[in-house]
Each structure stands twice: as structure tokens, then as C-alpha cells.
Amino acid sequence: MKTLKLMLVASLALVSSLAARAESSAQAWLENYYLNPQPAGLASAVRTLSREGYFEQPGHTALAIGFLGTVFAQNPELVDRWLLQLNGLPPAHHRLIAAALWQAGNPLGGDMLRHLDEYSSVRQQVDHLADRGSVAIADTPVLSSSSMNLRWGAFLASGDERHIISILEAIGTDRPGLDAAARTALAQDAAAHPRVLEICQAQLAHQPEEVRSVLRAALDDAVLAKPRT
Image (tube, rainbow, N blue to C red; front, side, top):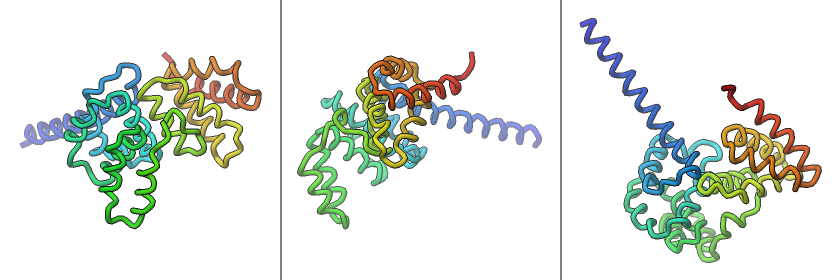
């Protein structure tokens, strides 16, 4: 009996370990996608992140729309296959996929938004949104934490420095909470991503003084946050 209990405990520990590894694997796929783009893994990663509640975490809806919208725009020929593979997601996550398609300029995005909100109280607003089309993610200004997360998601999908520079340009705009949010985001992202640190360092000479002072502080925070080897 004692041996059976030990085996059961060991089995549960293994299952827990494998689940944690699967979670970090799907999240790592997204957060490091730009380093080694693997669009073939998109449907599997999205299903895993959906199950784990990743998209419900603060800021992750906008991040996911920015990320997926960019990947959809990069691979329009794969969109139909992905939609089939992602059938069965919760309604909120289908709406996220639709918003990403709309943001990518894919006509299916508007059609999906209309269908998903057919009986919604916001149907009129959704119809108007779908009809007027979207602004390209790369042209979306950072005016809030949400748009900042949108651009960060697009960076994770592409590695395009324009998204980081757009976040830098938001510093000093006097929008409530945005300066602090941008500094914190830059510090965290620069600590985790050498590419972000490189972009920020290169931009020091090109930004106005009020931005440079905040940028220097963020870079100092990034250095302190980097794990020692």
C-alpha cells in the first residue's frame, strides 16, 4: 500500500511537472516567436494558451490581438486552415481571433465580428467598426496601456523596432499613467529581450531629452533586473 501511495504521488508530481512545462512551452513560443518564427505551431499554442487562461490575464487580450494580427498578416494563406484548427475555442477567444483578423485587414475579421455579436447589445457599434476597417497595427499610436500592449504583441510576432520606438514616443505625452507604464514595460522587456535592450540603447541619441531621461532610467532598471550569470 505504501509503495502504491508513493507511486501515486510520483505520478501526480510528473503530471504537474508536464503541465507546467506545457504551459511555459506555449507561452515561450509566443514570447520568443520573432527569434524563430514557426507559424505551423500557432493553432496548438493558441489552444494551449486558451486552456491555461493566458488571454484572461491583465493586458494579454490586446497583446494577443497585436501578436495574432501580425502573424495573420504575415501568413494570409494559412488563415483558413488556422480557423478550422481553432474551431471550438470559447466565444471570448473566438472574438479575440476575429479582432486580430480585423486588425490584420483580413475581410474574414469583419464578418466574424458581425456574426459573433449578431444578438449583442453592441451590435450597431460592431457593425460600424467592421465596416470602416482597421488601422494597421504598425500605424496604431500608443495612446494607452492597451495600445502599448497591442504594439508589444506585434513586436513579439515580428521583432520590428517600430513597435518599440512607438512605445518610446509615448513617454512624455502626459497621458495619465502612460509614462510609468511605458517605463515599467521597457525595463521588463529590455531585461528579458536583448533585442529590446539594443533598440532602446540605439534610440538614446535620437529621442528628445525628456524621453532620454526616462529611457535611461528604464535601461538602468533593466540592467538591475537582468539575472546574473
